[in-house]
Image (cartoon, rainbow, N blue to C red):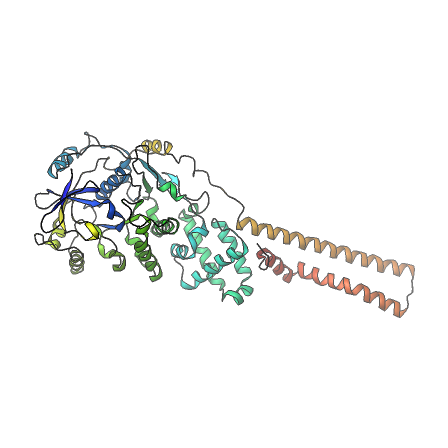
Length: 527
């Protein structure tokens, strides 16, 4: 039975309902655990590069999975793929792991692999992940494209029009067709929605091209991700660990951060309220969290804060993984109750200030100099503080992190392929679908308008030809007509002919081409 120290009186309590993190105190005998009932209160894993953050993330994912809690993690270095494979006695760190397990009293330590589902936005190292442009929405998409306030305003107008006109915007070609429509009708639209500058539309189109060159276009389309597929368990009741291949994705850091923000927002929007469950429905690890907040506008930070504050009642725990707690805004940092702080470097005055601030966010421990401990903990060690009963922060402890049961490090490509092939989702997302949407609907309208213009031009030509033949016949026959009858016939003919000629000229001339483009937009047509 696992126990740990939780207060000044060293009271011991049963931790069968917790995830074992490691051994705390000078002798590492004080067991540190993360209570499942408070795991949806979010958390932070911080520390400089090479101090053990990835291993901490790995052992926490193992612990949640073993307790039946699905997990989502982004694998930015390829190391977390080892969760799918059992560790072994032949591993070079085997002896050190066994020694550490004995030191912290981890009597149940065994090697084992865990149920893993591999995902990849590019579809090369896992099941493809897609969403539609409409589902992402203008706010998150503007963040992804790095748009200015004016450009974001134009994008909002485009989304509003697509909704009003019943034009599904699923992928990039839909969005491009929609922007062309907005550009061609901007004079009319500006009177209804505000000024639409062609420069803003051009800027959006250029940003779409950059994102497409980075491979981001493949993220938009169908079949869209079903969130239920992120919350599966295996036959033994263990939560599946969803691993996003992010090593290539990190070359486009804005796409990486925006995707994770979108996924978090989707969970927030779609999942029902369940209050405080006995254990989370899903635990979400946001690695390289600083990318989310770098140069982020206030409205976006406010949204993240709102999600962090409210998503716990939907049974989702969010854990930010970053180098320094200062990477996370204070309004968000205050929501993170469970903390694992690996070593921070303090070479400059700024570093020392950040170290002091980090130490001040922990509950005091009279037996521990927290600032000194954060500076001195070695690889595989950390200063930990987990929420106690009633959500009270635990006393900070210098903790030796437990060793992982799964393989430490990546797996072979053949092993990854075998896991993907055996996945319960194999074949569900691999083939993209391209249903009738905004691009095709606008193209149909354009084709219909072009046919109408062509038919009108033909009719005008035929009318002119008949008029020429009539005049020639009249000259050859020498027919005479009275002034009044001639004037009457000309008046009768002119009403229809002149109207026809005027419409035909409009349709076939410069103005006509504008009308055809207007029909393309179908601004006043119903859905």
